Amino acid sequence: MALTISNEFPVGTIAPEFNLLNTIDDKFYSLKELQGFTGTVILFICNHCPFVIHINDELVNIANEYKSRGVNFIAISSNEIDNYPQDGPKFMKKVALKLDYSFPYLFDETQQVAKSYSAACTPDFYVFDANLISVYHGQLDDSRPSNGLLVSGKDIRTSLDNIILKKPAIIDQKPSMGCGIKWR
Image 1 (spheres, rainbow, N blue to C red):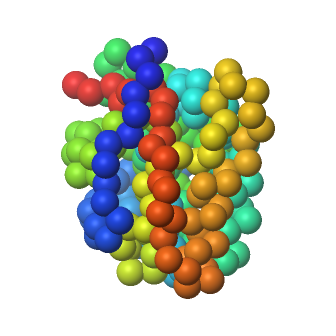
Image 2 (tube, rainbow, N blue to C red; image 1 turned 45 degrees about the vertical axis):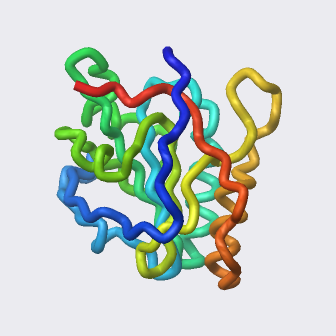
């Protein structure tokens, strides 16, 4: 596993549209169909990355907490599955059901969506306002699998609270880090 830092995605960027397979119900959904009334969090994750596994429980908690406030989460896996079959659709569905994801877990088979977002690692978080304008791109919080810090979701929570309270975007946005996306 090579540690990878997220690429830049400037505040103010409009979310690129997509239409991807939701592995949970085997239907295709566009960003417009899945976006939240108040905000939208798009996160690039996968099944096998220890950085994702480390945050999964808190990710579910945050998504459940903010759903009632009009924020929708959308998880996307873009890893190639010839060499990483555990990140394929049938295993994505198993993980989503096991962890009780309250959000779609989409498969980016062509990897074009990851490229359009300049996604680099898992996890990689993008927060958009009600108009799908980027207000945050970075880490969930300062916790990592081996640093002993508790997973809190502090950075994502702050960015979502700022949207809800109509406050400006976080100035100091720390990049996410984790496993590099497995490109073809």
